[in-house]
Length: 381
Image (cartoon, rainbow, N blue to C red; front, top):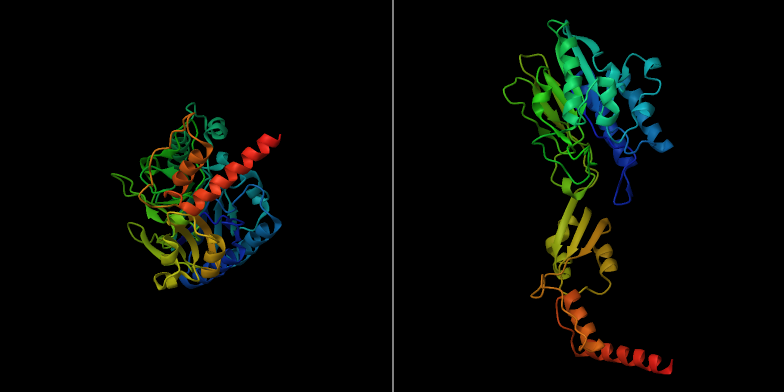
């Protein structure tokens, strides 16, 4: 009784302008191979299939191909996330083949996909991303919060599960659970200032297949045998995810408690953040990152000449370049400008504030020449 839990594909997303369709296609190829090799009863995709509500045609075709290939091998259960349009993702759900189940309607939360695994029923409940304002009327909830609507949804799940003695139960949910670690690349879920929900909301089922956060991680459910986990995204979508070990989650429900294995995923190109002087970034110390996607932070006190061209020649796949000077004057207060200061003195103070070092004589001469030219123009006017 095995399921493969994944989420947050974000098909169609870019990384600092780099198209990721090829990398996402490679992930799908690998996922198909994993399904073939592990005899899974179902593949669960817990939200954010697409990166935007109205995806491009190329993106839709990629997901369509993934559904076709996976559903030839096993049952695929999909729920929408906060990036997906639930109505668009769920279009045609009732006329799809039996091995493709898209659970996008909040009113159907208590209607699980039921599979027979090893002679025992497995009930898979899909809770789509629940925007409190939209879900309150459907779930008959007065309070405007994520916790309220998810509690109401889980009450329906537990009520239905009570009528299925002996069944194993899995819940798919797309939410930010208290205590989990976010990344820079997730969209804020705040409604009324509160975006998170306590993990205790999910008590009463065997496994909770979570989506939304991009880092794979366990979510403890205190005083409960329920196991909950974020599968994480299959690709890194920001440099804050550069240390993530991307994977999909293989869950074996044969025993008394779920047994979890993490199956690693291919890395299209490692992400590396480099910080230091331009001289350091050009040294052999950074040779390991030449073929990586690079975020380069240059700390020279003054902005180096031709910085962008120099770093792009050094790192062909650099995605982000920033100048964050470090020096004796770094962090000093903004200089005060008084009426008695000459324009040349004000400009010299500005140069020192920006570059964190006083202008040299050549720069002072340039400032004086510029001020003289301005005065000459004003006099002529």
